[in-house]
Image 1 (tube, rainbow, N blue to C red):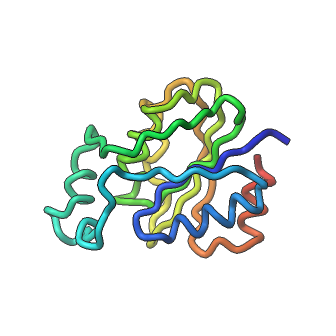
Image 2: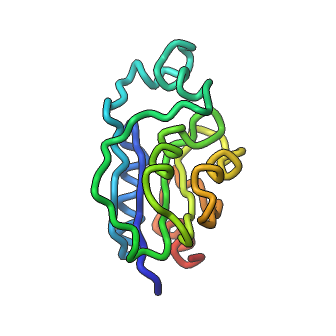
Length: 156
């Protein structure tokens, strides 16, 4: 079995819980994508067109700053990349992360949490940020049952 890294972004804590459980099931290392400026509840108000998340998602070129950490990906074959679905796709902070590290030759398997939508155009919108890697649509893991997590890991 290849060495696996679970990487996640979680604005409200939901995706974090799933990522932590997934890392245990996959016997994987884990890394959190941290925004330089953490998101507040008001930032996440999708009904407010002026909220931070709405502004970011309305401009697909926007790249929220992340805390840049010394993350060496060379020993990992597979990256399980998790995030909440915002406006039917991954938040643009995921593009920021992908553009800040070298994923050449890596296999990136997506997992997400969502209030009701699927991955939509996520792969299409992430691919330009990581052209030298394979991106695979994984699963929406809202409830993250042990069986769902095991199924995802078994598919690797």
